[in-house]
Image (cartoon, rainbow, N blue to C red; front, side, top):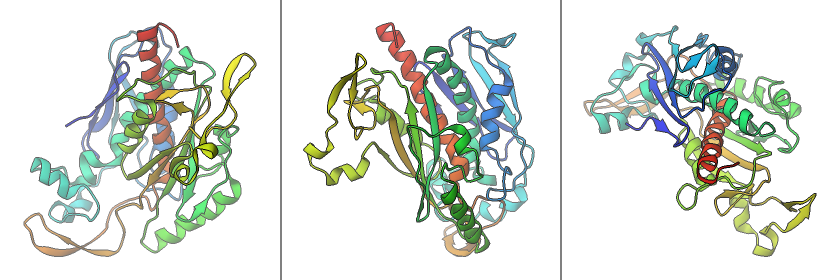
Length: 362
């Protein structure tokens, strides 16, 4: 099973939803970087369950422990291991799911591949696995800050169901995003989104939406043609997250309805730097960053667990029905935001280090 991501900055996540714990081993972090458990905990607190009235009520503090790779709060250049112990486990809620495949979950496909699975909470397919990614990205962000202090990575909820937020990627701040529990930077849209999530949850149903992300002040030159183009790496990174169904960057699919004259980004010299007068490329051309804002969007499906009876089959091949149980998000978007910016940080950190290794500078 492939549980590793990255090249120069590489993470390997481990653990199941209802096992002893989940976490990450980070290899390739440079020595001499200041790092504390508090740096990692800040990011984990943004993705943990039970943080608001519109997310799963599972009560987990998600307190992290750094097991290796530090001395007096400074990275050693050796592997860093971070673990979060699982506390609020209720495997009994999944007894029925042990023999009945949940529609649109990974139950059947894991059985088809491995012949065995961890049924409680979805095991390895659970979004709880993303704790390791977010913890690894917290370290990546410290490395990025040491190499490119002005570089910023921010993600927010762009849409939920048929509701869309108006957010300017060039000016949005973390405070704007964290000002409401749905994690969008449009206060009017946030109120409507929160109400929609509550309505759907009360009906035992679920909804999806999109997360938008921006990388600001990214230096030009990041990306490795041909197969490791920067947008390809970002796409793989975010599409490896649970519940993702689509990725687009810059103009995305809307660009297919334009002509070349409409879509091209003209170059101009501004303050001695090569700039573009528009950004339909989304900050990447030829798979390499061009110094403009990198802007992309990720689509998330409605949460697969719904509190309504659905047709399914058993692991022994019998037709049956199954109604969702347990504690689940009616909409994954608010908690997906820190997961998306985490995956972006892992990609950017990796390519900063690859660029430094190959070309000697960033």
